[in-house]
Length: 116
Image (cartoon, rainbow, N blue to C red; front, side, top):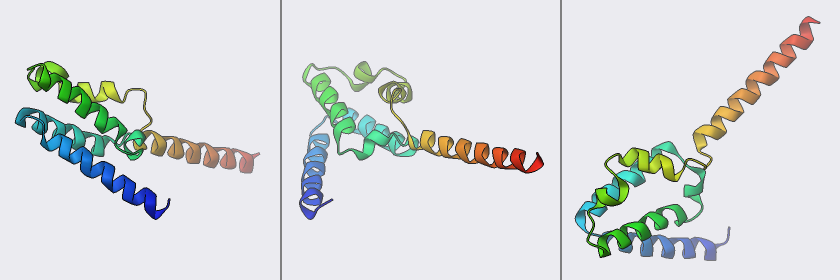
């Protein structure tokens, strides 16, 4: 990653934050909760720039322009809305789970081979 990439990333993030700040208050509140949720759940796609979060802002901007309340856009179960967005995405928890499974299987195979 070059310095230019870092600078570009910062510019994109600042533009993204400005878009979030321009949303109506109810949308900003729900956006912040979604962001926290994703940071805890850890979808890998979250590290690929602002793509996933920008898509949410796009959706929220459209909903706000149509005069909809934020929960009309997401539904009352915001966590389920988030889970649906990342259902086909790899999370850091998935990666960790795979590495644990791999280590356990490797250790079990080693133990089996020693007892033969």
